[in-house]
Every structure is written in structure tokens, then in C-alpha cells.
Length: 312
Image (cartoon, rainbow, N blue to C red; front, side, top):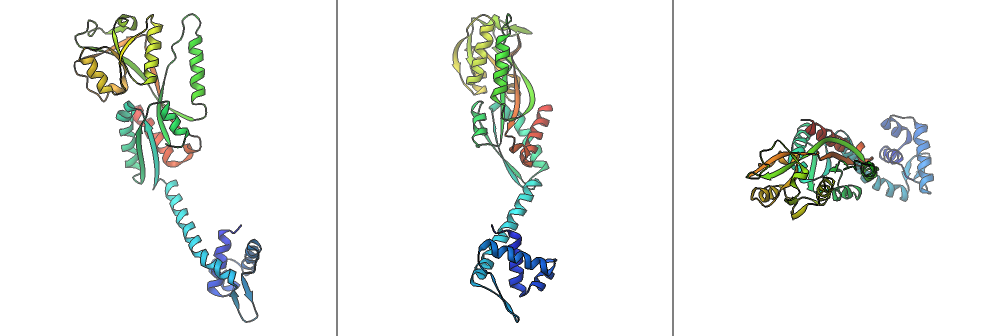
């Protein structure tokens, strides 16, 4: 294997014409230069220098290697400088994927703070709900995934559902670095003319006869679980991942819905009222990355800023 340090010695010898002059240029001893040239010649398997009592000149192989050494060493120097810039957060790229309510609330503040602190770091953003966002992370299509999982709905008599769900959640992200951000409670969304729109608290069971508007597949599954725990199966007439569309459908009197409080921060309800729902349904918001990526400075800085944004 040809080492960069040996190429530097060869180039110095070729430029100065002697081991002693090359040693002075490189700041080392003449025997050290001689030894490194012997190692390089052994590596390539052919002489690189012709030594006589009057001069030292390159062999044909030596000329070829010196010609390539300039490009190799300049490329290596450029690579070292670029890596140093990334390590020092003067440069870098982070590919972030987030679910919509996270993209509209946590992400803007986090990325604005990241840009102010490290203007050389570029971040791209793509929307995706879990589990697709987590698959993208494992497939190498992103560096950080903003995701969520719901608290388990347990069975009062055995608690088995809670234990099973907790175990499944641990396995789901067991190979990832998990940065907890916040716990987000779901609220009920009712038409403003609904009989319960003015109530301080609404039981899920009180909504058994309503038409429901459901969200993403994971949210829909949680809605069904919560309603079945309350003793009924919800009649889902509409399903959409678009929160403004959910609010519009509710406001038009077409049904009721559960929405995360985080989603309500960026959407102004029209003709709809939010109510506290009991028993509480919560989801855990986290930022995920791979263990090796967690050590990349730009990724670590992005995780830190997401955590700060969630704490505000």
C-alpha cells in the first residue's frame, strides 16, 4: 500500500535532488528520508531512484509516481480541509424527515436556530409519517427522523395490552438513537354547534354515536383502540392526513375528530371547538437517528436544536 507520507518524501526528493535537501525541506533527518524511500520502493516492487556518486534521478516508475503524487496529495489536502470544516460545523448536510405537525411547529424553530449558530450547515426537509419515516432512516434516505408513538391502551383487568405495546415500542426503535422531545396529548375537535362543544371535558364514550374523521394509519389505529377501550367501534366516514382538511370537515358538521395539540398550534380552527377528552390519549414525540450518525457534528447539533425547540 502506498502511503501519503511516502509520496510527500518522494516528491521532495525529486524536487530537491538529494536526500539531505529533502530532509531539510521536510524537517526530518536524512536517514529518515532514506528509510521511507526504501519502504516506498518495497511497496511498489520496483526502484524509483537511480543513485550515483554524482547525481540522483528518477526511474521511469519514479517519474510516473511523482506525476500522480501531485494530484493525489492535493486531493487529500482538499479532503482533509473539507472533513475539518464538517467536523467544525463550518459545513455539512443533514437530511431531515418529519410528520406534518412536527414540520409546522418544532422544525421551523429548530432549523432557524441551527442556521443562526452554524450558517454553513444545510438541512433538507421531507414530510413522512412513521413508520415510513423510520424506514427511510434505516434505508439511508435521511439522517434524522422526527417520529411519534402512542401510549399503549391497556386492559384494566390484566394490563396485558399495555405491556405488549410497550415491549413492541421498545423493539420498534431498539436499534436507533432515540432523543425524547415532548409528550403530546390529543384533543377532541367538535363542530361549534355540537351539544358537547362547550363542555370542559368530554368522555370518549360520549362520542360513540358520532361520525368520525381519522388521520394517518397509525393515528387511525390509535383512534380505534381508544374507542374500543371505551366500549364502541367508531364509524369512520372520512380519513385524511391533512389537518386543515380535518378541521374543515369538522367545522362543516360532518363529524368529530381527535387531533394532537401540536397540530392545533399551527392551524386556526374555523367553526370548530377543541375539548379535553378523557381518558387521555397521548403520543410521545421523538427524534431518531442511527448510532453512527449521532456522532456526526451536524446531526448532533440538529438533535440539540429540536430538543430546545420542543422545550419552549
